[in-house]
Image 1: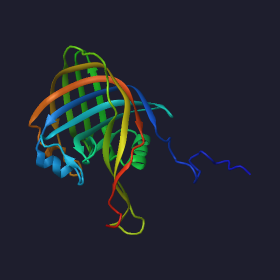
Image 2: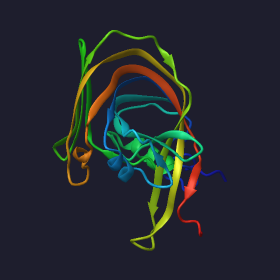
Image 3: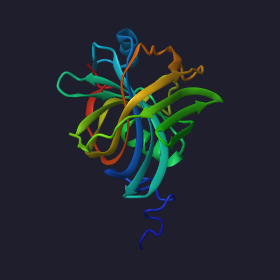
Amino acid sequence: MPNQFKGTHLSSQTPHYPMPPLTYEKNRMLAIVIKSSPEVLRALVPEPLFVNPDGRLIIYVGELNIVSPCQASYYEAGIMIPASDGHEEGVYMPVLYLDKTLPIVIGREVWGYPKFQAELSLRKEGGVVHASVKSEGTSLIDATLHLGDPIPPTNMSPHTIFLMKMIPSVQEPSAYDVKQLTTAVLRDEVRQEMYPGEATLKLGSTESDPLGKIPVLEIEACSFFTGGFVLDYGRVVYNFLEKK
């Protein structure tokens, strides 16, 4: 007798969300490269990863659109810190903020993206782009970019995102059933309608999200662009629960 619940939210045999790879199109993104404190970045990036010694990180706010295997649009912001596992270069993401439940769940459960709910906006008015992220009524990210002249579209090489995937144990409050350093792979990325420019950036804090403790020593580069990419499976770099 066929299981009439197969492929639905009631099934215990199938995932409760679409599985990778996820294809994105017609995204809009504001990205700001800043120079910060190497000591602060070391505190944000777990071992065994190596942190870039120049203190560089990227803050972005974007409007993203999944077109396959499902359709979903949402806003997302995050921090990317250039890092390496000694063999592969990539970026480590200590936190992301989203405004929709489905992409939060997919990202957390498959790869371990540290995604949290927040209020986000990204507005382009004439030659100015403004982005904001708020949590608990407090501004965490406030950025404004004055657009310069457009530059040619770019096809990006595949790149690696390092993540800390953690699932607490059902048996003990201080234990984990999963604690892994994982990767996600971004491939087939195309950046279109690219505009560099001059930006301002303010970071704020709440008790749970102390972004204001990340020093903004210098804004090195900034841009606004549209485009798409494919978010694919990655690998387990390091399993913290394996016996030594």
